[in-house]
Image (cartoon, rainbow, N blue to C red):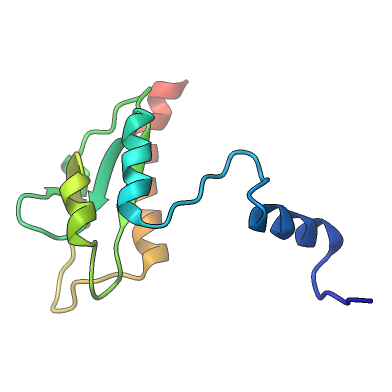
Length: 124
C-alpha cells in the first residue's frame, strides 16, 4: 500500500498531468515552442524586459478583445535571446536606484495591474 501526503483530488490531478490527460493544458519542451504555438493561436506576445527599444509599461496600450501572452525572464539573466526575438513588442517596468530587477511575483502583479486598469473599463 502506498501512502501520499496529498489529498486524493490533488493527487489525481497530478497523475493526470503526468499522463497528459488534463484538458486545457499544453506542455512544451522549451519557450520557443510554446511561443510559436501561442502565436498560431492568435496571441500577441509581450516580452517584459529592460532592453533598448522597449516601451515603458504605462505607455503600452493593451486592446480589449485581444489575447496576450506575457513573457517574464529570470531575475538576473532576463529573457532568453530566442524568446526575445519572438516578441511582438517589449515593455519594461520603470525602476529607480541602482538595482534594476524585481521579484517575478512583483513584476507579474505590476504588469497585470496596468493591463487591468486599461482593459476593465472596456469590458463593461
